[in-house]
Length: 290
Image 1 (spheres, rainbow, N blue to C red):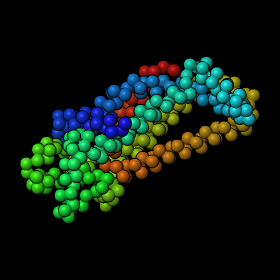
Image 2: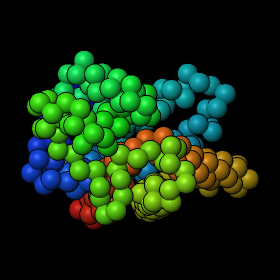
Image 3: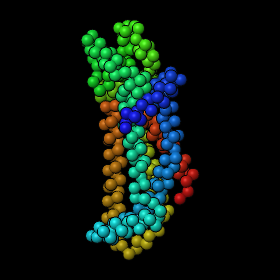
């Protein structure tokens, strides 16, 4: 499945790359196009997020009230979602789509000659073997990026190979080599620029999302909780605060881990996607009424 979408994305990115002549600029335009295509889902997700934030206080009260009666809790929860015309699994589709995008684009960036240039695997293996025979270091995980990096050398070895002559991947972008993998170039400070910007944008995106949820929840405090003991209320709020704090740290840590082992081209896609997502949420938050 991921290869199928990687092929489709590869066609699109290759068309853009042939038009602009730069891999980094092509990734930026590719990200914008994907974001536009995903806009209907983003609008639906924003509406779901606002609606979900509104009923969280009601959900917490039900969970506390029926914590010793799971069956009753499930019935009450289903009644609540039915009353609010909302599915408890409404956020799953967006998560699944984002996961498919993540893996498919990772495949595309990792194997640009397979998914963008559509070069046969046997031919690629021939290039890799030639490089190894001549004592050149070839990464097992990112051999196609090594081929792109040594394209002039291979053209000399295979002067009549039409596949090599059609490869048009300029991975230099504002002084950065988007084919580099930070884990393999730890001594090169430039490989940290895009991942660091991506991590910063992730923090900003999460802060904005949390602020929107808190604002929505405060506007819709429709449940009378005066019957609950203050101590019980504080206990629930502290638990939510701890959970949110943990998630705030887990996401950036995961981002760092992935950014270090993936080509910078993927990190650039994530960075641009995050920037677009921040702008999108701010605009949709004003357009979509509570």
